[in-house]
Amino acid sequence: MLTRLIIIITALVISGCASFPGEKLAKVESLPDVSSYKQKPKVVIDLKLFSGKPGTENAIEIAQAQPELQRITSKVIDDAQLFADVSYDSFAQADADYVIKLHLYNHGDQGAAAVMGFLSGFTFGVIPAAATDKYTLQAEVFQNKQSLTTLENNDEMTTWIGIWFIPMMGNTPQKGFEAVFSNMVKDALNKMVAEKQIKYALLPYPLRTVS
Image (cartoon, rainbow, N blue to C red):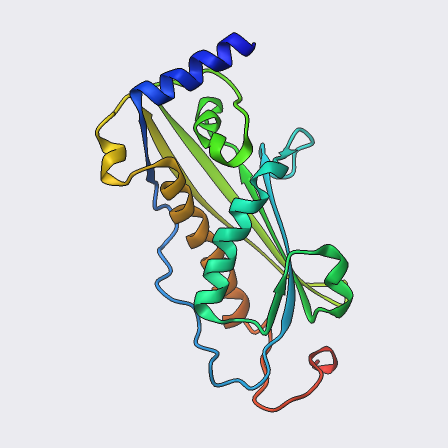
């Protein structure tokens, strides 16, 4: 197995790879403007990446992906200035107005998972000439441990192996994944705010008392 992984990694280094978002999900250009609100909620983000289809017992959490997922999610939230405070620490839930679950599932071609090594730190199998990662984001909003709404969106990314010149044009797996995942997060947050599942206040008041 170790020899096989070395061969795969060597092939990636030598041949190069390029990734392209599938754009199955409409691009979210911007999130709602909440700059006029005097009080914004404090949130805890429950953020995870799984290899496998959602709702199946064999879906495996990829804990090594956490730093990259947090970086991308934080950029989306910080750019829009949606919240007063954001934490990824589950122990902070008691002090948060909302808990937002963002669970991403990668259930595409097995070989495509190998080129996501920058996220997970390991590979899953032999890399084909081209492979497609299919993604499902399951999102949910909780307040006082009660679920307020559930959302789901889908997108994909195709990675080609052996196209040595395209990575020089910026079509790296990391950039491709960031484009896909950040848009999925934007789509989920946009719906949460637009449907008033996450509430804002013009005047200060305890968010937990709002019906």
